Amino acid sequence: MNYVCGMKLSEAYQDFVKNISIIYPQREAENIAHLVTEKITRVIHGSIRNTDLSLNDDEIGQIQSVEKKLLNNEPVQYILNEAWFYDAPFYVDHNVLIPRPETEELVDWMIRENKHKESFSILEIGAGSGCIPITLKRKLPQAKVMSCDISQGALEVAKRNAAQLQAEVEFLQLDILNPKNWMQLPMVDIIVSNPPYITNDEKTTIAKNVIDNEPGVALFVPDDNPLVFYEVIAVLGKTHLKPHGCIYVEINEGLGNQVRVYLIKINTMLNLGKICRKKTEW
Image (tube, one colour):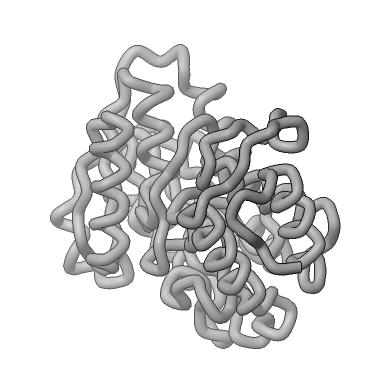
């Protein structure tokens, strides 16, 4: 059914769900429709089905445009330039990964474990949208937070979000895989990262809208060295973690045991206070 000027928002919502259900499961289609219609009309999703609001030409045009992009497998977060993480909206575009619920769990874990400390420092590796360091700074204001990324585009997004959410985070552009760059980094109490960890062999198991849209540099690692970032982070801890410091990382579930064995070995060698890990699924 074509959208027409003057049609009720509730009708447009139902048509939108029906149309995108071609490629999305029903529940996901409904969630996407809520996001889109709320963003365009400012009507909260709980009122969408009951409102008598009629849509104007501009709103109809926006809904049609979003629907077309969705049917071309573009993620709704990139279309709306918004993804919620923890309790705040983050600007996102194709320079950064879309924040995942599993990363929220990692951040929540860190907040709960460190909220009673008086003052400490955090280094986050792989800024992306800035969702990890910004949320940590917002919820742990007593912490000094620094974040680095190789991508200038990602850092521009992260800085934009930090300004919008009024979080004082220091951002630095560098390639963490090059040890010569480590001299730019301070000694810290905590290192945290959600690094690239998907092998090329796993591409066939990843959703098409992820492969086609999200930055490969933030997703993939060489098949012959899938733990490269964990190795670098662990060795970095030897020179940049204060006594009894902690490392928190998100991991590839399929590589979980390998990461566990490696980090236990490094933990013993470096005498770290704790190494925490969180698996994720794509």
